[in-house]
Image (cartoon, rainbow, N blue to C red):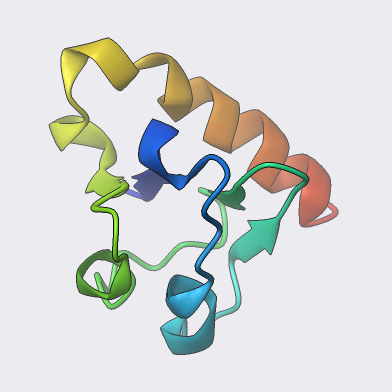
Length: 82
């Protein structure tokens, strides 16, 4: 179950999550950061670091942000070279 970055990150991009990620699976895009699900080891270190509570386990993403699961997969893989 990889983690997913959702809408509250847009325009904020605090990047604290990137600092604590032990496998560097979080990538910066123009408006927000994305997690590559193929690289995420589900350690959960990123979630408490987000100041806007924009990181969820993919199974816990609120209904109104479910589209971000696929968006993270596509953009995370693209930005991560996968």
